[in-house]
Length: 177
Image (tube, rainbow, N blue to C red; front, side):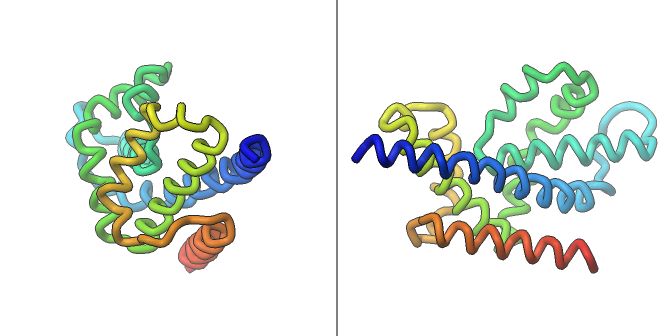
């Protein structure tokens, strides 16, 4: 039984990773637009290019944070000097921007909660109990403690697919307006 569960989790993992890429793309576009006019208090002259870069880096980091990714490690591994500079200036505010997005957008809140749950379920299926001691598990659990209570229903493949499809459909509608 354990082997069958692991095989199913691995198969689902491929599809899920593709879905997360689409989620990131739609959220990124939305957040860049939202953050475009922010003054992030970075030094130097504010060119349009600099403002766009700031909003792009902030949007990417907020999404990474919401999906339980290692934003500090990502910044340390990056070779992009501009990314690192913007990250250093905004790292203390990323959590607040993420909380604002979750507070103000029910659909994103629901999507994030069930995406975290689905990803954790898949990883637990692949790694077993080893997953429970990973830094990723701890980051995602922390987010679920904060936002998961609002959506108490246990996640399954069919439910997640429906939430995902609705998000994509609504994102495409709002993009075409």
